[in-house]
Image (cartoon, rainbow, N blue to C red; front, side, top):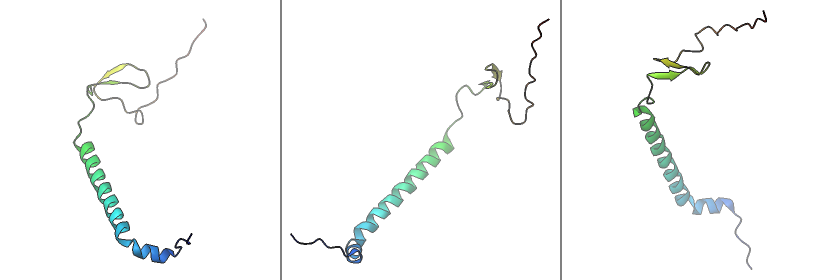
Amino acid sequence: MSQSERDLDRQVKRHKGPLLGYLAIFIFAAIISLWWLGREFGQSEGPRGAETQIDGRTGESVDGPAPDPVNEEPPQPTTNSMD
C-alpha cells in the first residue's frame, strides 16, 4: 500500500476551484434565504382576530389593542379579610 498524500498546501491548491464553488453556492443560498424570509415577514399581515386581545394577566377578553404591561401600573393586590 502506498502512503496517502499529506501535503495540505498541495491539496488546497489542487482543490481550490471546487472549494470556491461550494463557497459561492453557500453564499448564494444564504442570500436567497435571507431575502425570502425578509420578504415573507415584511409582507405578512397581523394576526387574525387582532381586534380582540386576551389580557395575559387576567385572561379576560379586551377590545382593541392589548394593554401595555410595561407602561401600566400593576394591579393592586386584594386583601382577604376574615371578619
